[in-house]
Length: 95
Image: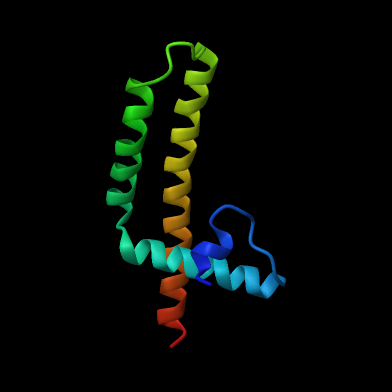
């Protein structure tokens, strides 16, 4: 069973060390596959249809919640990149 099958739709389980290793591997793999600017651009591409094709019955509060969620995911990508880059720097210095 792959990591995706284990964790895609549920929270990972395991010891604190296992969860930390899992989280670090997810960050490493993500930022190997996607540069930060590309990831943020792709996030925007995903969100645009949600805004344009939004349900006409959706309230303004629901639309505002989507915008806020997008903004927070955008910040999360940046924060995760900062942590990943710092970890990579620390690994290079420690060698």
